Structures are given as C-alpha cells and as structure tokens.
Length: 175
Length: 455
Image (cartoon, rainbow over all chains, first blue to last red):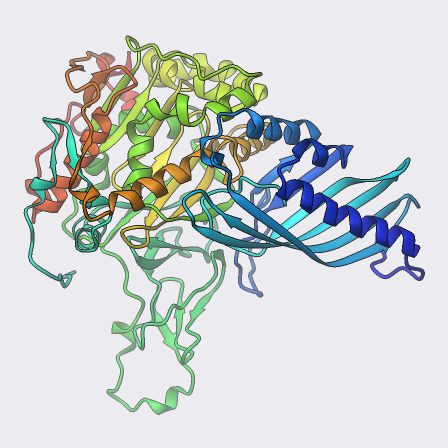
C-alpha cells in the first residue's frame, strides 16, 4: 500500500475522522459502550498482538502461530465484552476505575476504495484503579475507517502496545 | 553451590497451623521471609524453565528467571539443553537482553566478553590487555546450574546439586501431570509466544489460586462466565465426585464430569476434538484419567507453575520482591493436533485467560489487594482462614496423593503451605517427610502402571 499518496484526503474527511477518534475516546472514557459500539462497522476486526524482544540479527524463524494475540475480536466478541462490563457482576470495576484516553499523532491517509481511509494514531491511556494504583499504557494504532452514509465507522484496528511486559494485571479496557 | 544468608532463622512453624487451618498474613509481605523463600525454596527446588518445543534447534535460546536469578536456557549442538546464569563473570552485567531467539554467541555489552551457547568464554574485546596468567578461560564461563532435567517436554533446572531426581521431585504427581502432558501420542508443545505481565501481589497467591481454589470461580468470574454462556452462571459443583489431590506440595483440583473446562474455553471445535480422542485417552491413561481431563480443574507444580488442563493456559509466577510477581503465560497444545484446532485453542486461551481474557481480568485485583491489605501493621497480625473441607480427607483406591473429597476445599492450599513450611525448616531436603508416602514407587511411566492406578 502506498503510504504517502499523491493527494491527501479532503480536509473535510481528515477533520471528520480525527473528530471520530476523539469522540470514540470520550465515549469510552465515559463508559458509553453502546455509543462506542455504534461507531464500529459490522465486519470490524479488532486486534492487539504481542511483541517479543528479539535481537536485531535474530536468526530464528517466526512462530508458526504468531507471538500471541491478546485481542482478536469481531463485533460479536466486542459486544460480549460490553455485556460483561454491563452485567453488574464485574467486581473489579465497582466502584468504577477512572480511565482517560489521549489520542495524538493522527495521520489520515487516502486509500482504495474512495470511501475508506487508513489512520495512524497514538493512544495514551491513564488508568486509576479502585485501589488507587495508577498505570500508564501507550499504544500505536493503525485503523481502517469507512464512510457509510453520514458516518465514519471503524472497520479495522491493529493495536501495538509499547510494552513487552504488561505493566498491569489486566487489559480490561478498550484501546 | 553455597548461598549467603541474611539474618537469624526464625521459627517458621509459628506462621501457620495447617491442622487447625490458618496462616499468618506476614508470609505474604514480609521482606525477610521473602529473602528466605528465595534461598530455601527457589534456590533448592526444581524450577520450570522452558518447554522443549520452545527451543527445538541448536542455538535456540530463551531467557527467564529461577527465583530472581536471571538465566539463559539454550539448546546445544548435541541436542542437550543447558541452563546458565545470565550474568557476565567479569562485572556481572546481563549477557542477553532478548526474550528468545537463535544465536551462536552471547556477548556482554560492557567489555565484549563473548560466550558460546554452552556458556564457555570464547574471547573478549582487546584480548591483548590480559597477560599470561591473568585469566583462565576455562573457569570464566557463564555459571551453569547444578542440574537440568525434563519430564515429557517440560524442562526443569535446579541450583541444588543435592536435589533428588526430577522424577522423585514430581513423584506420584506424574500420574496427574500425564493427563496434560501425555493424553495423546506425540506429547505437547507450546505455541505462540510468552505473555508477560506484572502484578503487585505475592507470588503465592497465584500458585494457591490454581492449586485448589475452585471456590473463587463461581463468584469472581461470574461476569465472565455469564457473558460467555448466554447469561448462565457458573455450573454447580458435584461435591461427591470432585476432588483435591496433593503430592509434596504439588496439587490438582478436579471434577470427573469431563467437560467443564472445555466449555469455559468456549471453542466447540476443541471440545469435539477431545471427545473424539477420549476413547484413545482412556486406553492410554485409564478410564479415570480420561474422565478427569476436560473437567473443571486447575493445578500447580511446587513451587511456582500452574495450568488449566482443558483450557490449556500454562503459566509461571516469577517472584519480584515480596509484593510483586511477573506472570508469564503460554499456550500448551498436543503436538499432533491439526493446525486449525491449535489455532482454536490459542484463540480460546487468549479470550479466557490472556491479560484481556474474560476470566483472567477478574483475578489480578483480588491478589493485589490481598497482598497490600495484609501488610497493614495491625492487619498482618490477624490470621487467615484455610479450614474449608478440613475433615473431608478420604482414601481413594484410584487417585494417588493426599485426597480430599469435594472440589470446593482448601486442602491443596494446605498441602502447598505444608511443603513451603517443610522447605523453610529443613536444611536437608532429603530429610523432609514425603507427603504422602509415594504409591507409584519407581515406575518410570504412569501409562504402564498396574491395573489399580490405570483404572
């Protein structure tokens, strides 16, 4: 795929998609999970793959089943996670944890077909847990957003965490 | 190998009374007790370091820890496996910062001292600065551990030259271990990578949860269970036909219904696969073990390995101070499974017991808060209750080990802490009592056991 197309997407598209990223972060911070699900395409793919720390000159072949995928979700699985969060039985979230997401380094790139754009962004997630501990996670995201009717919907998201050892006991949060 | 020790040796027996069923909370946060654990337990036990499938070829290596000591596990040209300290004998720096890979040499970043995969010193930067007699290459390799041995794919190592054989260390627990390691021709392998996360909790809370705490599942994991199973809560436990079995601090809690953990994995294709091989499993391991496999179950190998047979998560709780551990998890599958089933297992494990898994997410907070709260200056002098099912020990004519009836029980946890106490109080491992006396004796292969155990 061409990473720097000759013509950038129209300014209106860049603004709309960037606003969608910010809106998404706000909805998730406010635990408006239904609102977030409504921003996802029906065929959404949501993945978080782990990294393994290797020498640059490492000679070993890639692992046959990949390095381990923490999230490998479709819309049904994401809905299931939301149902779990809303079940009233998630003791570790009651009282609620505080999560704040900051989205930055947004690049909106044209791609084919015309109603889709490739989007790079950086997410900084600040989690303050019920016992008062605070964790900071950073991740790079590569998305595919699709214009459908009046809205831009998330069609695919690949998340790369900047941690080889997760500095937290779980990833009970959407990126 | 000798180890320096700090401080006076307290009377550890005052920290618990397992006949009464209580523990002193200080064992979960006290820094002196933790240092003693590193010396008396981690430096003297057989510790899991790798699955053979992780390092199949000559030059393959991975890095891990034995207690808090960093080690390299490397496959040699002759096929053997060596385990050595990941520390340069010159100034002590780590010689390998990669998680895993394949290499010919480990080279220290500080002065370029270079070691082959056996740990032998092969050269260094500006070698001419050493005069004749300054350094004997032979005696300045990476320190190899005292013993390395493997049991059906699992590689263990120990710093303790006087340790019993690995078979004797695992003892009758091999009867249970073979349910996960040998339920099908070809044995097992680890697939995917290693997932590492940090928890601010004492390492024993992870081990004791998996060794016997079926009790927490229905409450802690209520949300996960309901979301995975159309709103249905955790199924009721059959207290008559489920058990705790403890052998020298290792433990396995299990039902005999054959499907519970496979249902929780949430991958019907995997269930079908095991149902298909179950008759062969029964021929291979006996009827009883084929009924146990796949049931609601969890297990730990003393001191710090746990797994869920059926759900296929395999994990190690690496101590990082009294109030922190690093959790390393892998996916274990049967080598002969078709690729699509292996892929299904991987997905299922990540969705249930990965760091973003619907069950795993509920556990960490509990262990972290048990650890931090138990540390309070007043709180830590209060006892913790470990008495559940204390009167339910039975003699079972098929199941080896110290067996208790009823899966909701603290029996295996008591067995684990009994072994902890044995190791903390015995200077010679050989003088520790067997718990219980071994029934399998020197049988090399639990598949070939006489009828009684193969039932």
